[in-house]
Each structure stands twice: as C-alpha cells, then as structure tokens.
Image (cartoon, rainbow, N blue to C red; front, side, top):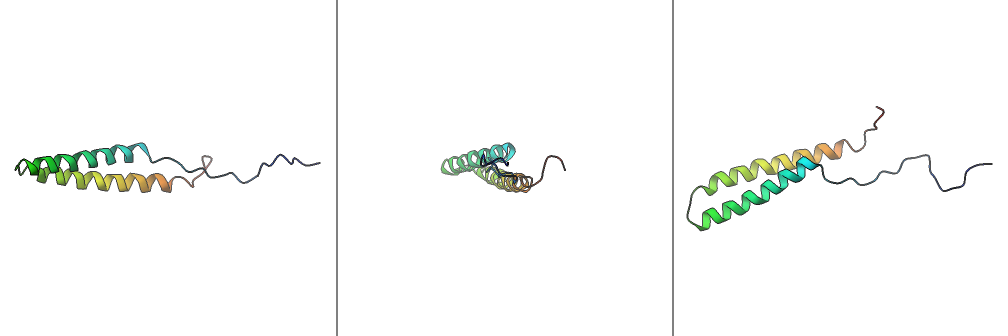
Length: 78
C-alpha cells in the first residue's frame, strides 16, 4: 500500500560548512595577528596597523558566518 522505504516527507537539515567569505576573512585575521606579533617583536610600531586589520577581518568573519547561518533555514523555492 504505502512506501516503507524509510523516507520522511520532512527534509533533513544537513550541517553546512562555514561560508567561503567568512573562511577567507578568518585566514586574514589569523595572518594579521601573526604579522602584528612579528612586527612588535622586531620593535616596529607598524604592528598597530596589523591589529586594526585583525579587528576588521574578525568583524567580517563574524558577519559572514552569521549571515550564512541565517540563510540555512530558507527554502530555495521561496
């Protein structure tokens, strides 16, 4: 009579990976922190610029990760 193949009519929500822009911003953040540490160890005040860049890229990572998580629940058909 009915299909007993174990399929459900409710789609299963798969965990998605971090959005690509968030991943790139995270890489920039980590690299700029490393550059700031190296700069300060060498005695250069240029590390302040690297710290500012790390803060900006950290905020971008947070924004894109949250934006990607918010789009998970939306259907393709509208």
